[in-house]
Amino acid sequence: MIRRALLAALCLSLSAAASPDMAPGATRITRVDPLRIDDDDFARHRDPAEWRGLKVEKIEFREERAKWRLWRITSQTKPRGPLWFVPHDNENGGFEAALVSIRNYGGTIVAVDAGIAPDHDGQRFNYAVDYGKPVDPNRNFDSALPGYARRILQTHRPSDGPIIALHSNQKGFDTRESRCNKSDPPGNGIISIRYCDDFYTPHPSQTRSFPFDDDDTVAFVTHPTGRDPARSFCWKLTQNDFNVVQERVVVTDGSASNYAVLHGLDYLNFETLDSGNEPAALADQRDRLVAMIDRALALCAPQVTRAR
Image 1 (cartoon, rainbow, N blue to C red):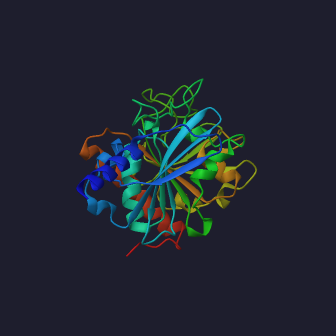
Image 2 (tube, rainbow, N blue to C red):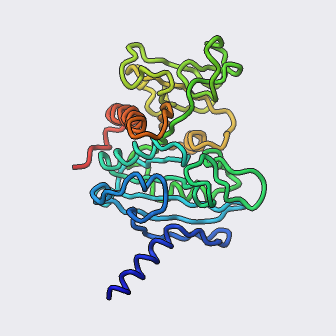
Image 3 (tube, rainbow, N blue to C red):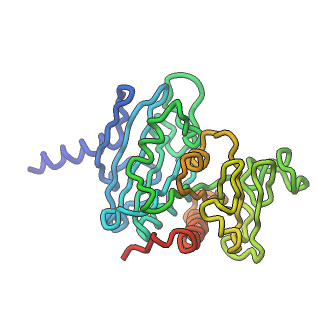
């Protein structure tokens, strides 16, 4: 019996780490023990109490030139709730906030695992490709690759709550691309309430109280070109002292936010500064994201209630 138990544990551990070849279009879904998963996000959470009432599944598939691995974490006590989406494996604050929020509100977490490619766990891109460049998981919502979005959204029901994407990003923004605050210190990307261009319009918090005492902590609210922004899901955040970036979508850039707005799905994107992976830094990122989540759900999704 002892040998059989040890063999079963070994098989479960290997199952969690293996990334077998998959036929195009096929999907392998395996229930896994979160305490045995060889992954940086799960390694930070080895207390069994953290996983009580949660079911964890590994989803593996191949589409076109890339192999994918997703972690799907479902609340067994409150499965109807938001879809918490963590697209980038290096944005650990997002994973921390998702774990808190699924316990608070139920629903499902879907997190992309870059570790499907050896030596790339905890990185931003998926390197498990047959050829060409690695893939940005948040630029792969492509009508030519429908299987990716379908698998991420597989268990989501719009009536259960919005899709909420959780990110942490580098400080500041690329001043060469912005139409405002061009004298700011040079940064990276566009994630700041001080950034603006033809597609991104900032609505800054007036009081700058937590979590918006940080310019890089923002909520994105998205609308298609030609539609009144005030009709966007959760537009009322702009009247409730949030840092809100209004995103106007013309042609999809392959992101989850663009996909959601073009498919009529309620969606919010919460961003905060990636301040590192030390416990205190991760706690600060988590708390800033959770503060935005709590206020936004109370304002915009009253059907989403706290789990008991």
